[in-house]
Length: 366
Image 1: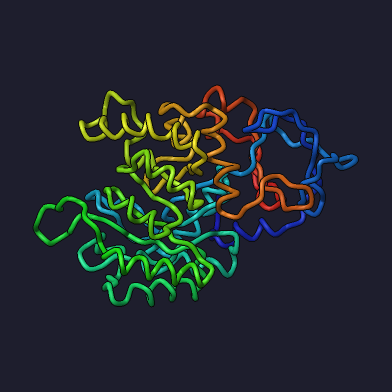
Image 2: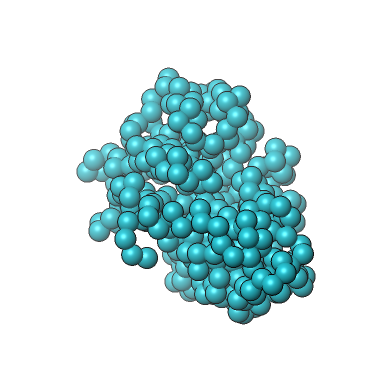
């Protein structure tokens, strides 16, 4: 992509020719003859005279439900903050790769909220909500417990539909090794924040890697991020509350083979291989998310390796996640988000990295 990323995004508003779709619709696996109208809307009746969209398999646009557009890994391994232009470039790149629904789960200085004026479909949490010493210093302005509610509501007022709570984290002190993760805020403070955010019409995504997750679900968080200490009973509670789980597998396990696991990763992998299929079976919305590591195709591949059937792994990256985040699938009269492939990603998730066509809000961009 050449030129300024904002200029690249302007192409998404163009009206494009109609398209005819003749393919297998995934994750369901049903044959479909449909199309996209000249106004960019999905239609179950192929438009007369429309050109056929390339690809034998189609999916609703892919979902990255946990990413940080304005964060990158630094040379020393610690994360660094990026500019709004860099965040926009990352958004453009994701869309070109077929990721058409994105939830940015935290940005330094709320930088991704700056994109909402031109990118209303982007779901952005704004700043990271964490107290002093409980998150990466380069990425957040500390939020003391007494300011937690006001800080969360300020992000909602600025356009955030979700807020990002760092609910537990290692204590980071200069010139000292990180301590074990521990709760960042008292549960009573989190409860007040969750209630206030819900009353304002927004939702709460909570970073958690400890057993604090049980209490967090109990006070009403809407999605568990990472969740490496989730247990079976938590799955039932999450379903009852209509919540979701984004396990961020590339960030947690790495995209490499299990043979390369550390002992801690091997233990987590074994637990997730039991819990993730059970979560899907019980009705938990499992969503794909890259964090700042890996790709959505790699996330889908890891879900499959951990026991999810191919259709369920694809649903975590498309239909299930899209509905949870308030995006439609391919519905008559609605703007069409889709990505198509020549080969079947149910046979090999790596196919997801080779789209032949990408349509964003009815406009073909690839």
